[in-house]
Image 1 (cartoon, chains in turn purple, cyan):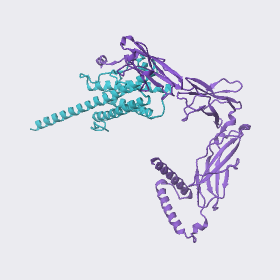
Image 2 (tube, one colour):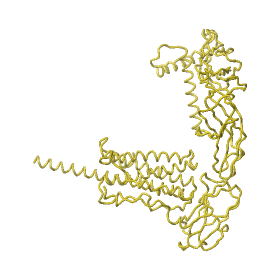
Image 3 (cartoon, rainbow over the protein chains, first blue to last red):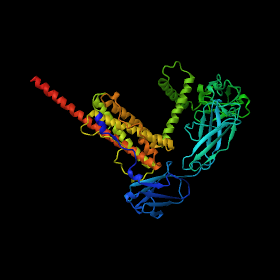
Image 4 (cartoon, helix red, strand yellow):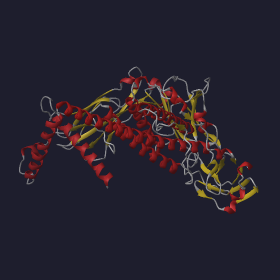
Length: 388
Length: 204
């Protein structure tokens, strides 16, 4: 194997020699949209190429020769007027070629605008443990060249300035501070936007972490029937365990909708109770119910809290009315029966497939099936609309 | 799997070679697509030539090399290609040029498949576990010069060359391994014929 070493050679890792005997000035400049640029391509005399034979391209497109000026036998200028924003983040390619088209040298142009001050800076803390902040870029947003945003914060009275580090949250203009946050002392928070053409700072917001607390959605949401009452359902839920050590007054909201509707009805006078009865419902109907929590007044904070996300939907059905169950003399009862038979057939098929090993049949299982049925309809609809 | 066919008993050298050939061909197509996407993304001039000078210059086709030595050279070259690609990916991330488009997606595929191909070529070597791929002097910073030494345009040209390098070496791997595969088939056929002749001679 040793003899092989003589066969092996890693070639010096440089660009082709032609790029070293020519150069463009300025190299990788940053310019404002609408400005002009004069660039020079200088070739080494050793190449024996006259500058008059050279030509320029910008992003692969040849620039007209009336924009060129031969400065000397080895230097050619090009003037670009009223520049547009950069086509790619890595800069527009301004390239100098010899008459045969060979690339002699290149320079990347960063054309954009300086950032404007970021706006709409808002922050929230999940269970007082962390802080997330988001903002909107100022002005018209992106400036064609990369702008770096830095969220900075400090304790209002005596703290040193710190920088938020975690920007990889799956969405832009957002940062996450996971720990080491003080309570009962206000923070000053702001965002700095910087690019090659300048920088801008947002307004400073002042907040106490306790004033911007949100929490997890209520856990264990149960929805059940109220005896045989066909127009009512009972909802119960647990408080967020994350806030159990804090003194606060939770506020809750409930929303519910019919299985085949997208309109939610909100019940917002639930207060701090952890159960509620929904009345005035349709009989024999499946409802989806969600609950959310607002932790108000943690340790006496006077700010309105921030609502948590809604809990996962829980489904339940109201009992069928007597009239329907008995069949009565409804002229459409035959239709109802056949629909019911079809639905039951479908349901038992599903039970065989999905609830294998489960003991006993219950109305809960039926509700579960309705949720599954609706989800699969939704997925099918999405697939259909994607195909369309 | 295209082309060579991964014949041979499962787990045999012949079947492993067949699989490596198929993987190298697939990767070669990925690399070609990656270069196209890079050219589009960076609006590079169409006049960019195909480089004849290799960054990784090895000669796995030299006639006096044994099969094992040839695979070892290919493995070393691919190893070097992976390092070059990783440097490029790191540099693009540092510069903030990477996004979430098709280029980045194909780039990830190429990196992953290159890792698999390295593993495949390693298993083809006699004493694969003990093998040390040939690498340039670690103290020599030339390897990343193309990205760090000049301006941004030079770094783009370097990236372009690295992608060409990947195309060359995946093509070379597919070709060389395919030849080895065919040679082994011929040897096998010869041995079988010889065995049959000896057997029938002994019977008569």
